[in-house]
Length: 192
Image 1 (cartoon, rainbow, N blue to C red):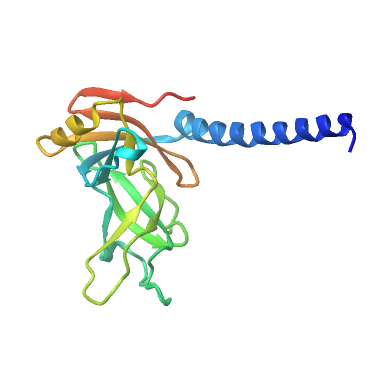
Image 2: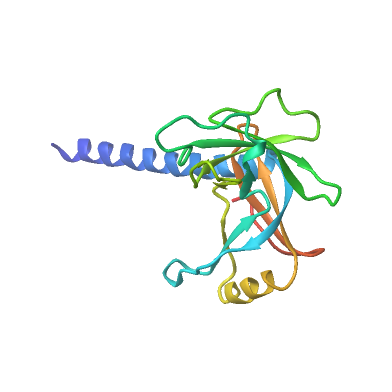
């Protein structure tokens, strides 16, 4: 292989890598910029991993979905665990969005009414006969905070109500937009 071919191959690999990274960033930014905003109440979850930087692991008011909201019970060997779940959300009287319907593998029917939307997650618990709740992870359960602020935020989460503004794309993908302590915005996610 001559020197020119080597440079062309290296350049092509670099362009592919840059293109891949750019598409990841642009996709996330598109959700933040164009996704519909929902306000969720935040619930603290332990533990904290010191090796990955300062972050807070949190749950939401929609992290445990009542089984009666599901259109059907899953009929597979895992009883729904690790399957895609779409949860229909509607804002409550206090402005916090709440789960009103759910379905495995596809969006609930009929299509969302005005003021409603479907958020996509993964079931992290199985459906068994005594189950009343199905745990769902939406990919927004880890929130990175400025260095040194993780423990203080975790402590405050246990003392008073926090909310998170989340952007939800039309396909149900969600991204964290901002963290609020009451009326005070503590952190806003930059677009890039």
